[in-house]
Amino acid sequence: MRKWTTRLLVAGVLATTAAAAVVAVGTASAADGVSTAAAESTFPLADPDTVQAKDGSYVTYGTSVGAGVGARCGVTGHLFVPVLVHGSGNTVGVGTCASADALPNGPGSWAEGNVWAPGVVRFGDTYFMYYTASKRGSGQKCLGRAVSGSARGPFTNPVEWACPGSGRWAIDANPFVSGSSMYVAYRDDAITSYPETGISIVRTHSNGMADWDTRRDALKSTDIGWETIRMSGGTHVVENPSMFKSADGYWYLAYSGNNWDSARYATGIARCGTGPLPSTRCTPRQNGGERPYFGYTGTGGLNPYRGLPGNHPGPGGMDFFQAANGQYHAVYHWWNGSRRFPIVATVLRNDGGFYLS
Image (cartoon, rainbow, N blue to C red; front, side, top):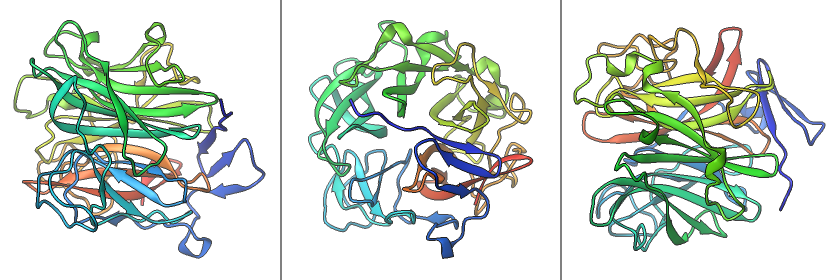
């Protein structure tokens, strides 16, 4: 198994343990070959997730779209997992048309219907996709896993990955790599009782299947209060997790809360332990129990600690990923009242903490 290096984000500095090069966070510019301006897509794509392909380009995936939805550049019809291709090297950008379906045969025999919130990571020479689908015959929302040698797909061998026996949901899986191991963070309702929800992190075997003895609680909806402010429906939502590591030695968890179809959907940041599997639950940052870290600052928002580029309503589903030089970027969606659209921004840091540009 290939030994993966861990890149570290610190206040003012992004360093890699495997190279002498150091990228200054907060000072990168277009002249350095690094894209620092946020890029907005016109393609309606919810729950985006971005990974770098082997050829240096970037691939962004998202929730299923119907035939005729969004601009197309090489693919037609219903797309189970739309693919947007964009950027190269250190310049990430954003895609505006769908060029492929990464999971063209659907979620597999274990499930039926559409696919939600795919998360992809490269582990060795293989790309692993984790996705949400409805369990065949029951409608329970569960997680599947598929594999491909290419970031663009097609992803094959789709199998059931996590489906709680209690009938509770397992959704929004996001894989990440640390050292020589792969991990998956996901919304895990099985660690709570209705109406609460939670987030778990688990290490996987080399085939991407979970080593369930390693599963740890990362966060529960009881750890925050802003997810229920003016919400509709009964569920107390924390979901769409993404893990990243800072050179202060800590892992951080990004997560979404409140109603996805409202201006209130927003993003929290919590500090976890010094390892990818937290020994205790992660701690929300910047008064994060009472307000989101990132969110809409206009009417209907939740007074977030920080706004985001464009200040659009309902920013959530945030995924942290790295460019070729190790610079962190984040992709997330916003809500225009009927559809969600992705934005890619650069992750920077000052004395007040993380911010996006």
